[in-house]
Image 1 (cartoon, helix red, strand yellow):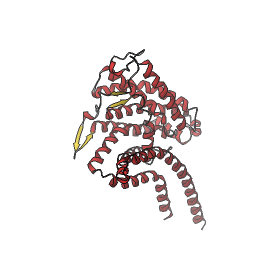
Image 2 (cartoon, one colour):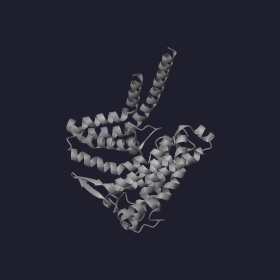
Image 3 (cartoon, rainbow, N blue to C red):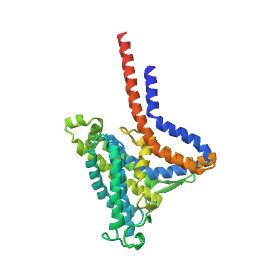
Image 4 (cartoon, rainbow, N blue to C red):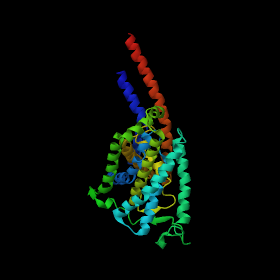
Length: 368
């Protein structure tokens, strides 16, 4: 009976964030007055749009580097790929694949740089990756504002600012829906972008397979204990760098999938929120900075975006002001990261206390 109580307590402490979001959503859904079909359609759309970006965070967590807020480096690489294929006039799924090919070497280079920096900030990877993202964002904006059209040729004048160089603030993507249109079904009035979900399925299979490879096992070992891993002959810094490179490349692909669903590229500010929302969705799914899984990513994306859909209208119907719901939505999106980190620390402390209590009880029973 004690073991059952201990298991229940561990489950409740580990699932505190998803339970909280589920309760908020259950309360807000009737207040929003949205139909079930509308909510299902919105969740399916957002799962197809955002899941890949959330899944890109899993490998650095496994390698013990926490949430990779530097994934916006990959998002920038993906946006550069989309800008170039839009200028070249390549449309549909082939254009998206070409954007991935263009963005991949940039993402690898940025991921290598990010991994090298994070290896010099062991134990402070999350805040360092966040600041690193802001640093690279400045270089990215300089590249698009001054180099594109002046040094790097851009053929389409509609993409350039009136001065003749620099990319415009917003670009319409002709590749919008490229993966969705490969295989699209409607079930009960809800469009199901099977093509995009197949790509998400492929990345899930890749992650499952990768964890079983030697490199995946090395990352798991490094995440558990760097000193023991180094003693066992694992190149710790190289392994950590490789996890960041893979995460950055996946983030590049994820941003391309995200933007092909949106249809418009916000050139200069389109990537800065990618890491925050992906991290929040992962943490909402019950993940921590030291342990995350594919179900955490999928469930968290669904719960997080369900709250995003219903809260503004629920706030409007409850108080007469939609802005209150919008403020609450933004407050929760930022606050969930802080709350999850606090709960993770609290959970670790509680787990240690429960383990000690269980061992004392077991020792007392053995003595009797």
